[in-house]
Length: 482
Image (cartoon, rainbow, N blue to C red):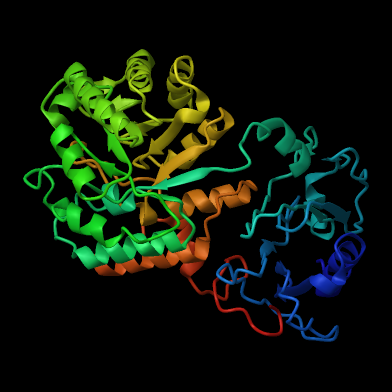
């Protein structure tokens, strides 16, 4: 097995030669010679480095401590390969422990081992390849790759992987938070206005620059948002974000403007039947109402965002042709909408269907005017977002803690969780200007009020405190390790 001493010696030498031991500390723990865990963090300069003879232990990664960068990984007895990714100034580090098997060294970002008998697989535990991809994002990410060895294949390191598959992903992604409106509108129990206002303030404090605040629809249809005027009045002096509101018709638009709205949104659908069920009129009639709002908004220099529902599938019509989505998107673009959000309302989209839809829309609307809005009913939201990013989209709608749902789609779950989106984007090195720790506090606040667990997998995982070496855990940073 790889000893703690061997591992620490390897990583120490890597860090000393590439990053600088004065800024990095390492903690390693072995459990019954089966599990190896390590953590790398960059502590604030005011924290002293631990003594070289300090006992090796698993220090809890602290994702909520803004100055810290913490990482943890686990390897078991039989390990072919593992990768550790962490954030810091741009570097790429690689090293291998000595082992008894014949192998070739790392060459041109490829790691290849000679053929060997399967009975010798246990010996692989003495050869470990570490590859570190660093970037300047302020939040840490951890990935572990542990595959069965195949002699006829080569693993590609992060540098080559990034250049081939992720080169088209934007450096910055704007997140439009819809939890305060889309996330809460279907809650049966009326949520107090002050709770909604506090949620919005917490979301803004996390760094979100666009927070959809409420909707000026008829209280008869959406009683949860009957306090739209009061909510908007309470956040008039909140700085650091824009607060668009939904307006279904000209009457709603006028009420929103009177209440102080500075940005509005309209919401046609790409499905005729869904349009009639949601707004009691067909696509063309809804587009006509949108034009009336856009014209009135234009005279007041008020930006209008357009939402398109059912861009992939409809609970009433089934699959939606990409051409229908493109038609509605082009109509919104021509009437002057500043941004058009493509919504997979019931979450049936997959990367394959999303690509077809986006290709059709991109033929008629500029890329920088598009956003995507995915629900996670079938667990496809993050995959669909990644595909959208690769196609040039740089604006993503999401809802804190995955709040929300579709009242016209049985079993449809909420929007993709903002925490999960931020976690993924951090791992891709994409800037969002969102503090994941503060975002989790906002999610915790509203979930406690609603009496439910968070729908975010990232928030759930990062909130659990565990001593198991293979799990990340969140605690306050200790003075010794930053």
